[in-house]
Length: 56
Image (cartoon, rainbow, N blue to C red; front, top):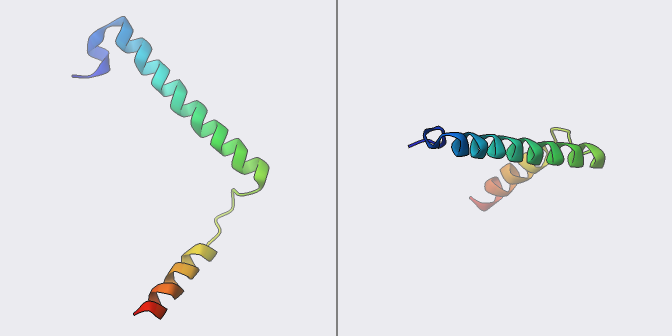
């Protein structure tokens, strides 16, 4: 059963969820943009690869 099967309340809940998640993503985007962390930093990937090689 989907939210759309509940009529007008389902539609309102559907739009509320869409706006909530869009707003949350927008807040996260602007926060990371403000902090300058929108880069694709790969240092953590290399750190994990090095720790796996040293463990085994």
